[in-house]
Length: 312
Image 1 (tube, rainbow, N blue to C red):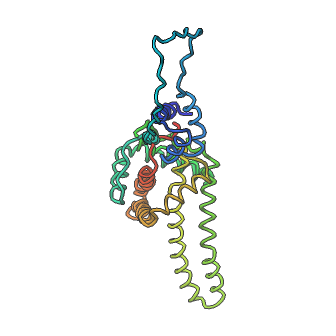
Image 2 (image 1 turned 45 degrees about the vertical axis):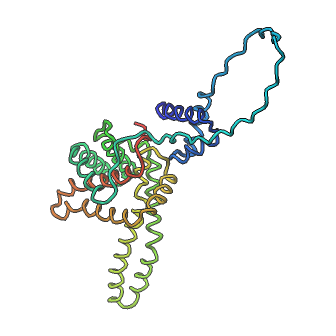
Image 3 (image 1 turned 120 degrees about the vertical axis):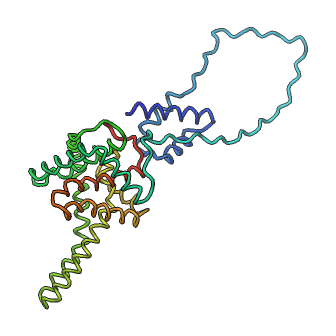
């Protein structure tokens, strides 16, 4: 449990209770402010209990009743005015980090480029370490090291201490990272499989037709890969940001990405082009441009998911 978040919630609960809000009203407001059910169930009962108003203890002996000098006239009952509904204070969001990047491809790329060039040593070093370890382990370590790379970049974005070796923190999320990788791979395979079967069937006949279909199918499969990558764009960063396991990350990423699908699809295509641009111009240049792709994705991610959940 994060003491800072608990303190924020206690302040909010106290303000809400002073305004006359019930437990259910406070719970609904917090859920509307971006908290999950699990977080509310963990933090709210404790915050509510610790803000319970303290009742003054009655005196040990009741004071004697003194008869009034004159007869007491029973006061006329006046119905109290119904209290107006007082809106609670804004539900506390996650602890604020640096202001998120502006919306739009140009702003995302500009922010990512500035972040990358200001810390090119650690980010490039972490990317190279991750690539080398992945090659040596025949790809087994690629998913967790991808999560580790996003953790390092998100720390840089949030202005927290970070180093190239932070990529190894991704091993904390080994199975979640592999879960995302397998689901995305399976989704791409299932969607692309029918097109592959078309080519295989056509190859039994006219070879020229088969070659034409192969080119068409390759183009379709590239489009499919970009679509799947866009819908799963936030899955690895969500795991790196301590916002759930594989299924929760994929579900959240899908729901978030589809709301702004075409803008994000364009961003994914451009980010991939930028990432491989160095390899086209000069093979060694890919080492320097490839890490810019996860930087762009991290900036887009932070524009939708504020900082405050990562457990450093």
